[in-house]
Image 1: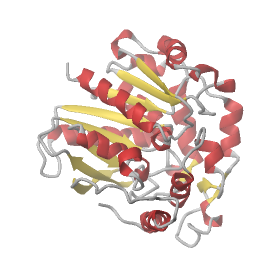
Image 2 (image 1 turned 180 degrees about the horizontal axis):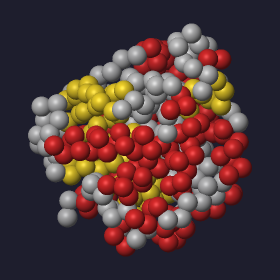
Image 3 (image 1 turned 90 degrees about the vertical axis):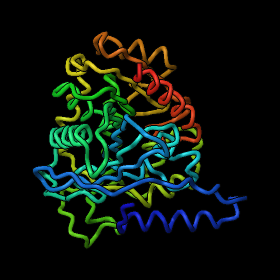
Length: 338
């Protein structure tokens, strides 16, 4: 599995937290992983990822990419994995996963920040889809490929699906066509230059790379009563991004683009997502409300399904009740086999 200074910091934070008195017992032993680190060449460098296989044969793979502020740890969370680790849950259900870092963060290449765009990420996603379909890194070709995005990479998943029509399903999380612009701007106001952050200073980031200010992530990305240990590990593993990734990425939230998706789509939001649920969380009151709001933006070919995770904020993988969302995803994944 990939290692980096940030990953080591997260491991250290996880270890320290596991030693605190609030944890009555250790997490159960994790199942054996069948994982390999892989890279994909793209025009701006390389995309780093980890391909994990289930115990048995798998013909379906899910490509999991995080949005801005996060890297691969969002999908492969190290703390209480039975609760918070999305990747392991998918592997346990029989699906292969590729957890990949966007350009500019994690173990992927770090090109000049101003060169980063959502369009480049969408092209990189297409490269991965085609590689997995063709057989990659000594593995058999996958017959079904599903993309799963969060926030910014939900937008890039829309862009990839509408440009190439080469995926079998599109999971969009932290995404809607009814953004609360004041809240989006409020979250952006908590960003500052990575070179000014003690965890990133002196590591060669140019001034265009940004991170969240310490202590702001709980209000920005969480809902009701998150586990404080999760928030602390999240802070330790926070990631860089560039504002240049936003303009074309936000185009996916405007009417039009998503209507060209021809693969099944599942949208999942938290009911307390301050950015994607519209003013006053109005479009995420419940699943039926979100469905009514989003259905006009998709064609019948998308076979749209929606789900609202109660009390969750933007980071639905890290909500205490995230298992309920994973159950919906697994039910939807089963429907793709038909």
